[in-house]
Image (cartoon, rainbow, N blue to C red; front, side, top):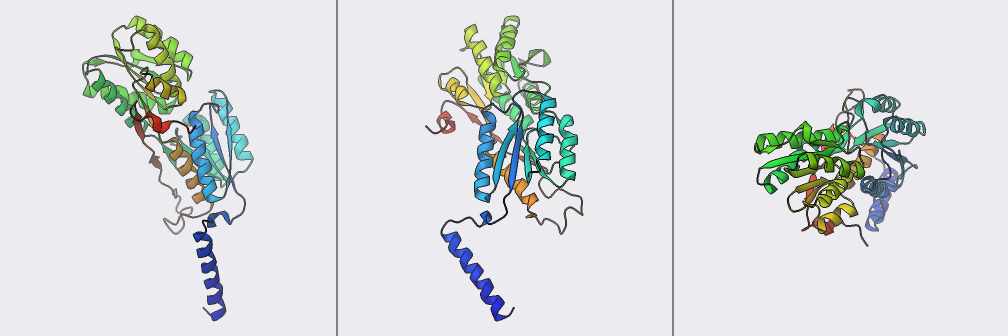
Length: 329
């Protein structure tokens, strides 16, 4: 290196140090890039925290984000919105999957075109997506089963409020049922105690109400999504058996937290939704900008540069810690 090159490099390093000391993010110095989040049921509050995490990552990286989704729980609609988003040629997509096989062709087409795509919350594991970030759903069902098992003293009957056709919810249900049968043999559960709430609180309320009439010995309920928890809590309250039934939900919003604080819901399992959005964008960004050097050429090696799966975990929210999940006033 000659003197001129040395002085030039020294000036760049000095300038970088000065900017860093002033809190300027050097990652902002790049061409404009846009990353899209795509979901189904776009209006539910669950996705807001994931998108908040994505926006926080975007602010750090100096990129832009968009949020696209379908208002209804409709497989055809999500495929359409995903294809439209791919057609807009963003720099990357962070996608939650309504049904694994249905979206696989679109995901594969996006990857083949060079687009950086990762999935979160619900996966299409046989697709070419680079990575999946989400809850270990089976293990989350295990946690729910142990909560119900302990609270009921290991006796009685337990119901599950879920959407059997949705992959991630089916995994939670299986983890719950398997654990109850293995660890709490005096609790009766199984397919005949499953209520399909069709992703609505109304479906959960009416479905559980009917099951409680048919099976009055039910004393444990696992609601596998936020809408299920709200509706199931209503059915339990209207049946006047809140002191008898141990109920744990899944996910949270302000309404769910109110139910916990009012004693109408024992607990809920909170997913790392912010983590999914933040690290989902970070992962897509790293692929898009060739920041990963795990091998000399991962494309030629035909491997993913990212971990195939990242478990963002769950925590149990109870009345003792619910305030920490409240939105700032």
